[in-house]
Amino acid sequence: MNNRYLGALVLLPLLVMIFLGGWFLKITVLLLSVRALFEYFHVMEKKGHKPLKILGYLTWAVYYMLILFIENPLEHLSVVLALSLTLGFVYMIFHEKTTIVDVGITISGIIYTAGLFGFLILLSQKENGLYFVYSVFIISWVCDTLAYYSGRQFGRRKLNERVSPKKTVEGAIGGLI
View (cartoon, one colour):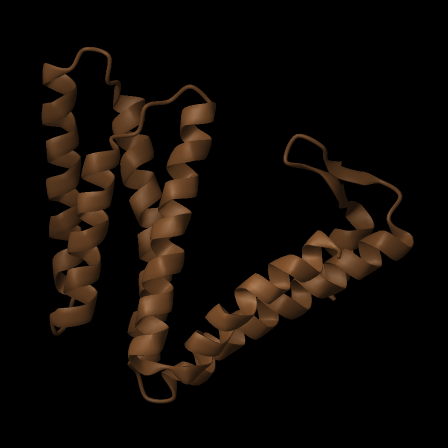
C-alpha cells in the first residue's frame, strides 16, 4: 500500500477527533503540538544545535495550561515567553557549551509549534470558531492533494531539492490553485 494512504489512515482518527470538537479537539491538538515540538528539536539536533529540551517542554506545558484553564490567556503568554527566555539565558551563563542560538532555537520551537497549534484551541472557543478550525484542515488537505497530483501529472522542474527532493514548481502551482 502506498505510504501516502497509510499516512492518511493514521491521521484519519485524529481528523475525526478534531471534528468532534470540545475536549477531543483539545487533546488532539495537544498531541499534534507535542509531536511537532519533538520533531522540531530532532531536526535542530541533526543540524548540530542543542535545544534546551527540558525548558522547551516545560514552557510548552505552561503555555497549554494557560490556554486550557485561564480566561484571556493571551494576556499572560508574553510573560511565559519572557520567563523562558530569561531561564534560557541563565542556563547559558552556567553551561558554556550552550549558545544563544540554542536558546533562540528553543524559544522559536515553542512559538512555532505550541503557538500555532494553541491558536486552534483559542479559535475553536470563539463563536462559530470550530468552522474556522475545520477550514484550516480542509484547505490544507485540498492544497496538499492538488499539489501532489498536479506535481505527479505535470511536474518537471524541481522546486528546492534541499527542502524536499520530490517537490516541483508545477506541484506548488497546483496547490495554490
